[in-house]
Amino acid sequence: MTGKRKSIAALIAVFVVLAGGICFFFFKFGGHSAVTKKVDLNQPFASIIYSSSAVVGEGESHTIFVNKEGKIYDIKGEGVESNALIETKDHLIMNEKTSVNTINKKTNAIHSNRSTCEIYSGYGQSAGFLDDKNIYYAIFNQGYKDDFESYRSTIRWGMNSKNSCKDIEEYIITQGNDGQKIFLMTTDLEQDGAENLYLMTLELNGEKLKQKKTLLSEASIEIPFSNLLEYKNSLFFTYYHKQSDKSFIKLLEIHKQDAVIINDYILKEYLPSEDPTYYPFNMNSSTIVGNQLYFVDGFGNVYSFHLDSKEVNRQFSFLDYERDEYYYDEFIYFKNDDLYFFHYDRALNTHMIDQYSLNGERVARVKVPDLKQVISQGLTEQFIYDFKVID
Image (cartoon, rainbow, N blue to C red; front, side):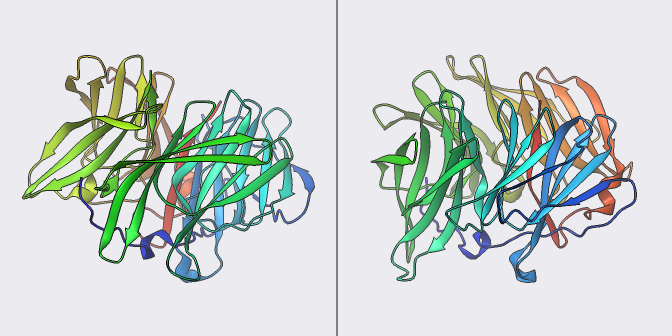
């Protein structure tokens, strides 16, 4: 692990997407007061959040719902960088700067409630749902405090029509949960780099938040590649590590009760000529199924790590795909025993959602041609911050 500091400026952007198009529906929802409207999402199976950077000003977002025929429904909202949709059993949760919008999956009614906090940026798919407590949460990056001595993050959580907020004076590397508690990996941002690695445990009880922080290491993590994943009594996440002229994808294992590092595994080694920015797609590009941890490198290769035997195997590679440039419109999502790859198919000139089984069979392809009317392909002014497959 290294202590190289990440750019703070890269974490303070807000995203916008241009409205328009002919073959999709458009709906704008302000969300500053408690109000209910109804939308027709047309039985979506996936969602995508797009936006542009903060340099354009206040910004706006587009939450785009895609059905299995590739038709889309666009909901425009406030710009929140690195935002993420939250799915519960009955609802879809969308965080705005000063409100929370909730869509009832059965009735398609969308309800907005004002929040007690104002937020601007997430950490990259830094949201989730505590199944055992029926509580959703999202963690936001608020930047340095006015004294520039301490860092500020905000957690917003709730259930039904109520939500609460609380500041956490930490810079957060990654997060996850076990259905009851939220786990955070945090670090100290110093003038000459990041130092120390901590495990924080958050417990939510109504409007109360209980925090516990434990030092794991005096070294920090350079670039996280995944959110925290739970297996038995351990937490795992993948990250990038550079040593001399070699680059690695590594896997850190932490005991979640004792808050100690159990092991630090090497999953994949790369040549010096291979650009490390290709390695990850997004923070949800890893999952655990049974006793196997699956992860995707940035070149479209899917690997498994056996959590008991510790063996690493390449399972398959994406079909009709070659990574020759870093694109921001390529996202991975695991759902049940399948992997979904959202990307722009340059041969077919259309956005695509490819569905793979974990043994490598491509079982379905969904073309999303109308998405080009809303956003552009590749790294231009618009960015994707979240992709999910929803029930």
